[in-house]
Length: 186
Image (cartoon, rainbow, N blue to C red; front, side, top):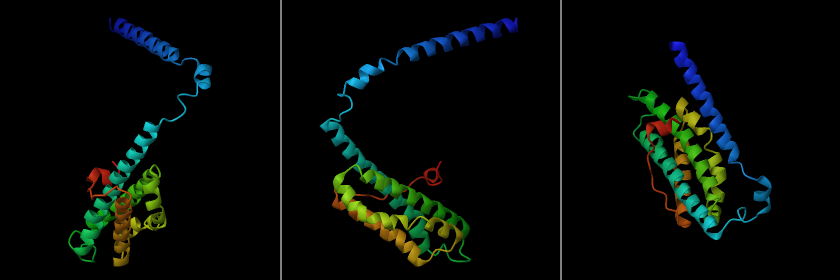
């Protein structure tokens, strides 16, 4: 009896797979017809406007997450003295700062890419790319406990510059603290 049930399940699975394959193959359409009509390939004015608007929104979101992570897990603990040798909870604070440094760098790179979708924002953010690149290895320095006041200050200065650039382009950036799962990349 169990072998009859297995056979029936296998037959149903084979039938459903064949039906699914047949319907997806039928949806392909005539490729020569879609290649010759150029109407779908040219962007409309509203599509480019939506893309710019979305780019500015995404810039604000990514820059806000970077700013929130920098303040919450780098600047604030540094000012509280949690990075000093012998400080209570130093190891945990350094690990979080290292993750926040890498996260900040990643989100700032994404924000710069988002800014390319808006001409005004792109011009405002363009001078900051070298400064953002300089943050690349600071996450590792923070995690190892080798960061200085100048390193923490560079994070703060870049974040403030990005905020000012966004504000000048009409995209005001507000700090948004990411969750621990966002910070660790999960």
